[in-house]
Image (tube, rainbow, N blue to C red; front, side, top):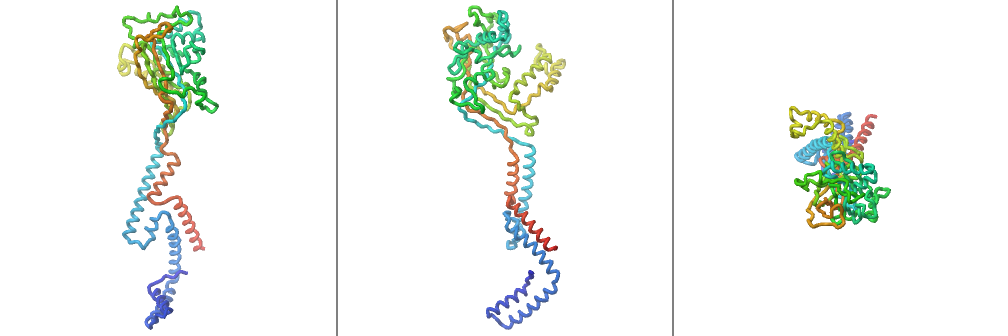
Length: 488
């Protein structure tokens, strides 16, 4: 049983201690007797009140014993450390409570940010020992000429788009080709169809040639193993710079006849007025794209003219995007999907369904009062075919282009139909680096970061941590046991 000590009780006990130590006088003896009598009377008069005080002090002792051991030391200073001056306790308490308020505000802001699903865009570079080759499409600037060439081949007895007809068409356009030191124009040991493929892109682009169609070149010169990885010893594309890559001379007029070099299938120059002929408008469109995607010359295309050497220095970029809830729409996970192809299909759909008036300007077609084109355009833009979402993973090739005129006296002996290089469009395509540039959208908060930030706020402003939470749990358990023990 705990007894409340008053000043007189303390005085009595001090007197008894002095008596034991032989520090004694009559006055102290009288005071001792009076204090003892007084102490007994106080105990009798307190009765039940003392027991209630004992219970209350018992709970406070339990509370104080636990709080004094908390890692959040501010609690002990504010409520239990009576040795501190009052003004100091006020400062500590104000700081503690202000920290609590600021902590709750920051937590609410963090929760709000987490629910808005923010993301950051990171830029990384992945070092590689080699890089696989992209697909490259070459289209003559005059599509009607390439389509007329195939018609002429059919008239001369070859089935259109048959292997023989395609090979003839390829050789009429590709007059000289070198790929990492290997002949790719059919003049060497290998057939030209191992490198090139004929692609009919319709009236807008005509018949084009695609290098490395369906990854056919990579499968030979840079094969992948069963894990989808390439090895430097089995891949020839580890070299980069303008001394390597694809170097090709193309004839956009398609004058050469591989079946009979002395009898061209078409007299292409007769299609144009020679007096007003400008070689800048006689050339090729070039577009670089991934081997799993369809070619769209309208996007990221490069224009090269006859009589010029066009140097295309490229690098590869991989973009990794997030879908919902970080964006309003889910990204497309299909690896064969291409947004540029989707947009091109949308444009073709609008072109087929809406009547564009070529006699007036584009502005009048879109905004003119008498034009019906803008109404049709707006309707088609909301159609399903024009909803072109972003792919989750896209692979792009970023070109850097430079051109130079071919020296007037430049010739290649034996080259047909002309030995003058000014009659051809020359393209030199190569990697400027084989490192992969990666652009990735990364969530600012995942669940683990979110929990870490929340507890970081709590720990910084209040000193609470995981140990404190366990200590609080133990404290409440101890208080519960004490209350149950008092009641029963």
